[in-house]
Length: 97
Image (tube, rainbow, N blue to C red):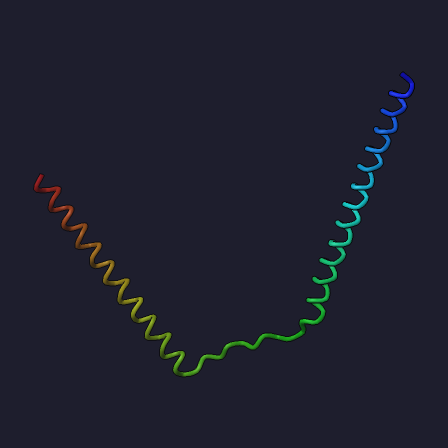
C-alpha cells in the first residue's frame, strides 16, 4: 500500500512540475512576443519621418472633376424627375380604382 501511495504522490508531483514548466514557457513566449511587437511599433514610428506629399491637382484634373460633378448633378435631377413622374402615374392609377 505504501508503494502505491508513494507512486501516486510522485506522479502528482511530476504532473504539477510539468504543468508549471509549461506555464513558465508560455509566459516567457508571451513576454518575448510582446517585447518584439512593441519594439517593431516603436521603430516604425521613429524611422518614418517622411511627410507624404500632398496631391496638387492640375488644370486638367480640376476640369475632369468639374465635368464629373456636372454629370452627377444632371443624373440626380433626372432621377428626381423620373420619381415625380412615377408618383404622378401611381396617383392616376389610384384614381382609376
